[in-house]
Structures are given as C-alpha cells and as structure tokens.
Length: 188
Image (cartoon, rainbow, N blue to C red):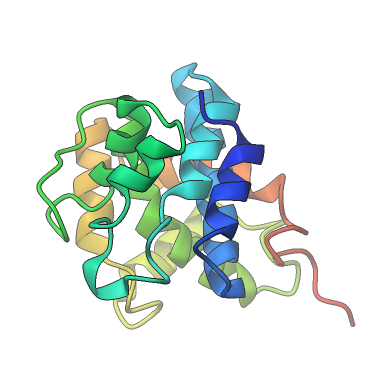
C-alpha cells in the first residue's frame, strides 16, 4: 500500500517546481478530509492525493500518459494507479471514477485551487475561512478562472454531495496544514 513517505519520494523523482509540490500538498490535505468523511484510510488517500500529478511537470501536454507503467514498476497496486488516472477523466483520458477515492481525487484536484486562491486573499489565511466565503469565490467565474468549476460540479455530483459540503470538508482538512500550505495568518 502506498504511503505518504513513498509518494513524496516518487514525486520528487519527476517534479522540481515548488508550485506543483504545493498543489500536491493541497490535494493531499483535502483527500485526508474526504477519507475521514467516508470512513476510509486517511493516510492512504493522502498519499494518492500527493502523488496524483506524477508526470505533470515532465509531460504537461500528455498528462497521465506517462504515469501507469512507472508507478506500477514502483510498486503501486492497480487500484492505486487507476485512482490517479481517473482524475483525468473527460480531460485527458476516459478512466471513469467509480470508487469514492477516485471520485474524490477527481473533484478536489480543481476544488483545492479555488480554496487556495481564496485563502491567500485573507489576512488570517485559511485559519478562519468559512465555506460561505469560498462559495462567493466559486460563483465568481473570473476568480481563479483556470480552475474548472464544471469538473468540480461533476465530481460532487458523482459523490452525491453538494459543492458546499465537499468544500467545507476540504477547507477544514486544509486548516490542519495551514502553515505547510502557506495559508497561515499573514505577518503584519
């Protein structure tokens, strides 16, 4: 079973850009919150979340096309590799998310981008962020415009949950990692 330590080792072999590591940490934290919500293995889901963009820096135009074989060779199970591949459903592949793990990763990949951007604008970062302030930013299509809201809506629908509820779980989970995510209170 993939551990967070192993996920960090593997991502470090393909990734150098700090913003990609930060994105990995955001997704990791959010996945931990959703694992808790679904009563699943939090550490395992966090590891999958951390590693999900394994080939992105090296192959941004062929994302997830250079993931399956290297990760299987590195010892990941078929289920773990499939979960990572499924976050590209409808965007770069046709691996449809079917498990809660796959659906969650598909959803939070884009969702955490909006949460991160919204929290950065706040004096206290994410530490006092409420879901209502997230929802205002979510509805503003110009805010964090690169984050695909349709994917977020589709993922929440797959999970049978409202965007607001998934966002609330992710925000609370990300609060636990505020410093690591550079989302703590700003120094005055």
